Length: 211
Image 1 (cartoon, rainbow, N blue to C red):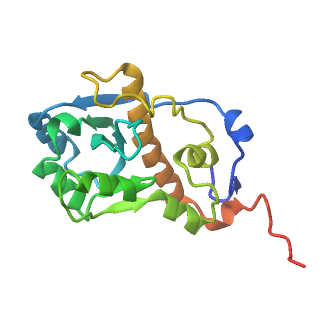
Image 2: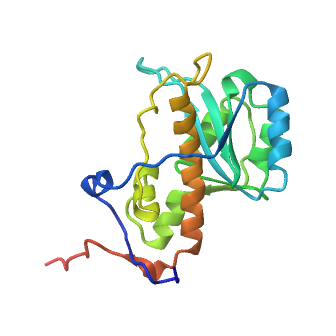
């Protein structure tokens, strides 16, 4: 499709979102549960310059109590790696990646992810790209991962597993697909935003002149 051929609305209603087809990640998923596995992941992603990025945390249902991040998701064009930080810890190799300015880690709400990881291991973040900031710069007005997927990718994603136990002995198939989908969608949104011309975004609710 030629650039400018398809206009994109700057926001989407819940009703419009619910009418879109449901999609999920269908590529290779690699679950990592020890430091040796982390080393292997670093070898696999060596040379990658853009990674879809997300984290998951075991929910806390007690007021004032929060848990440490349980999972880091990294998506390339070929695979998604689910690094179970509750088992691996945040190793030096992970710290080096989180600090690397030459590898873009793209995601939504990344500030909270960084803060959560810094509670486990201190590091100076580098190379992180906030998709919400990119979306604002393009003129979009809906910023959640789910709504950005609806607007830009024209499908919806399930958030059913979000509050599941991310520190379970073994991740369920549903958890793996959910986690991989989030970082994969982040990568796909980044690619779409990167080529999108601001002129393609149309305001579905033009501001009225104030009397």
